[in-house]
Length: 303
Ligand code: BDR
Ligand code: CA
Image (cartoon, rainbow, N blue to C red):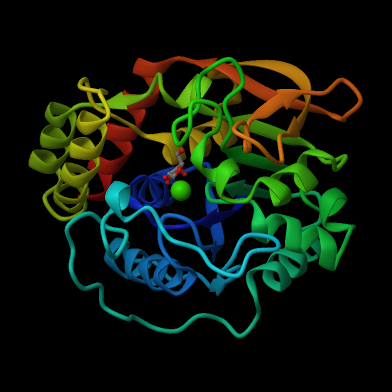
């Protein structure tokens, strides 16, 4: 499967990129970077650093710096760290972004790999909405859009109603859900079932000191954040779970639901059913132990 990950690395994004690289079913053809866990320039820099660390080369295209209609944005440094990768204080600038914007790159790759390209969006959906605005055929050229975001029956995580990726650009997310394109939404209903414990990270680090050790190191910050908000039994591998939904949808349970996003008030960013909208495959469950075990096995294979 040809895959682009639209990402804001991000600790769990780093895990998702490592997992995608380690999955034999996936051929990563590029990464597109968005604001979100970090500023957009930090996201693309971190994406390039992660490619280098993992030992592969793909184009990295930087995209949106701001949510639709906004003039400023503050990243969630308390969740992912000041540079997006836990307690790392500096991240090397390795290589360069491609000249195209994320939206231009997504549109071009979707046309080039018409009917074959899966886009796994694990950041705010601004780059995806921009790609649709640039070329409405993007919706039909891609094989599928798999989103990490939203909360259907589950509570939100950034507010009681909203999941962070959707909350950070509710307008862009609503544009995407209004589009008639094949979408799977892997939200908190599924990702909160895929918790990695300190012991899991320790096992991965012991068996794979370079990549597993790096992931264990950055995970400490993430585990501490989750502990501080009352999740004491591990941290969810949100973005990596979306990668697994690209390759193994049969291990997820889905409901077909039209969705819209609440655009104002206390509930801004909430994903709610709207039967007038095209149906999205919304994940309402996943085999959590299977996901965790496969993540560990694949990361260990990276050494
Ligand atoms: C999502 O928000 C970000 O903090 C994570 O990287 C993930 O994509 C979880 O709500
Ligand atoms: Ca993310």
